[in-house]
Image (tube, rainbow, N blue to C red; front, top):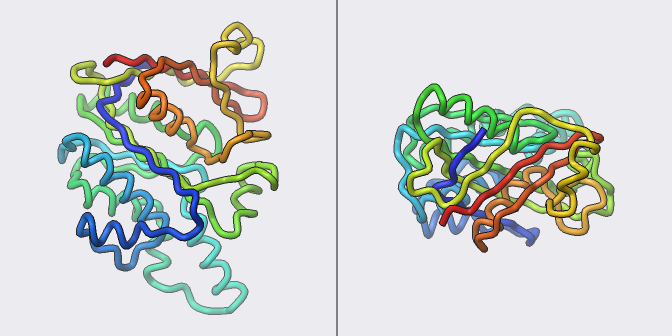
Length: 258
């Protein structure tokens, strides 16, 4: 399967205090009321992409995440089960994954297919597979938002993802506009639905970038592959990426076109 990248945006948040709500309101004129940090992160990445490329109203939108809006889950658990408080209306709304994709679609003025999906392994590639299958039928283009929010405290996120307690995790949002057509594309990604064992990848290990959630020397987030692709496109470097989960591996190849 091949998809062509028309453009991209990336943002990694290393500071604990986020100023995105203020930026979204002052720079982009977005109404951020009743929204939380997870939604703000998604919106900011979307606006960065909108600055770089035209987004059509019939583009398909896919928002994907490793653990979703875990902050609101922790918040809800605290005041419902520890403080015996009722669930607040807008907290309930923000618990729903498609709330985030609704706000992103509204900000980007997209009226096409709108999907939110979570996968705890091979998150980004799994969503690419869904996008490819949809575009083959629709003939349209797609926007993918890969979104991970580092919760505070981050113990639950690390436990869910199976990450060492000493591993640093950060918040990040990465977008790409994708197409089946190579016209005006800046890069191409090639992948498939199959995973393999280590024996199958031994021959390409010396030239590949291996992404693993365990013992990583850099800050980690579940959809880090999307960031690494954008990073390579930025510096115009062909790459082979291998993403691992337990004893299974998936390969994605990136080729720079311009």
